[in-house]
Image 1 (cartoon, one colour):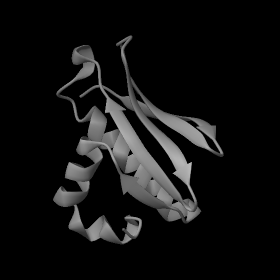
Image 2 (cartoon, rainbow, N blue to C red; image 1 turned 45 degrees about the vertical axis):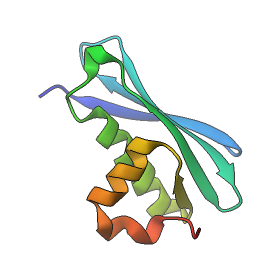
Image 3 (cartoon, rainbow, N blue to C red; image 1 turned 120 degrees about the horizontal axis):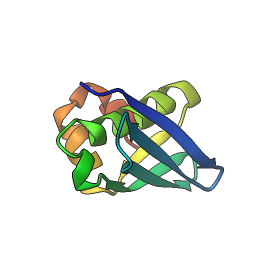
Length: 98
């Protein structure tokens, strides 16, 4: 399986996570905007060329790891992020209160 590297961009009011797949030029992205002490995960985009490799899941996992480390909650506005949380109920404590 190819190496996937996640990088973080932005901060403060908005940012992105980028997934770089070894040997590929396409970049997967998860974008977010700050809302109080939460980050609204609004889009997850993975180009077809790097799809089917778990790239979107790796992006969400990076967001979740940062939420644990930095103490913010997550609003899963993006349908992929919402579905990820449904598949991982043990992480539900990171969801922002409704």
